[in-house]
Image (cartoon, rainbow, N blue to C red):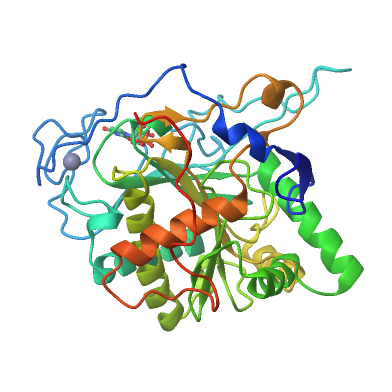
Length: 387
Ligand code: H2U
Ligand code: ZN
């Protein structure tokens, strides 16, 4: 099946992807990115996120030593004016009108909050450079933020844009959290498909998927006792990965100490592998998807009910969407057929997983955990022109 063009189905979103392995050999005369490696300074006096510096909005950051979270000075979503206890609420009178303008023209109010999560005080050390202990502190911060915010908001999106290629506006190691009182499209698609699967089979879609991938082995990138990293069967981006806890977990806040420690370790190995792939800091957008919070205007008791409704249905997971295709300077663009018809890929997910396994086995000092029977270096070099 892998050598011929075919389509693969994403059961989480209900969307298809076209897989055309033969196209991987085509020459490239198109545009190239500039591969810039940011200088590794510990403190940049001009950085708005470094400890002690003034932010663009005029607030001065404290002299923080660990992770540091603040409300985004330029938030895309704000709490409603009628929610004045929330920081950054809209001005009184600024509440948007109700929904419908009638007929085909629909709009709806959107409220939420946006935060910035500095991963640490050091301007030059991102997650990939940090010790497992430091990454664990970031995991704990994500979990604490999610626990707090999911009491109030329907959707809590924890994410990181890494690198200018993914639109990061500041090189200081940081991520963001956006929350919304509506379920965004991507979350709604995953919610619907996980619920449908559970209604039909009585089991969790993603836990079933873990069993399938563990048996198949060929798409596994990292096989930890608590976590599994795969290039999903339906991946759109060449080196896209899906990170899943092996046991039923709905949200980050539910992870126990052992799972958080192993997550810090798995993240370090995955990110080191990404950077080793093209010997370059690998850009990506990554983010966590967990069970939605209560419906808008919900009281805390609704949060409890909503949690119960998601049990067995929702499985926590993280998506990594890196844009690079062949080298640090050649990225994939979703254009043409992909915008107008459906996404397409050439490198197969199995091939991508093999390449990631191979670099991980070479770069990781610790014991490389590879699925049984798979050789880390059993992949042919990409047949491309050197850059
Ligand atoms: P990105 O690098 O992913 O763009 O995230 C940086 C965020 O930090 C961005 O959303 C915010 C921007 O609005 N920011 C502040 O809130 N205050 C600042 O002084 C600088 C940047
Ligand atoms: Zn900085």
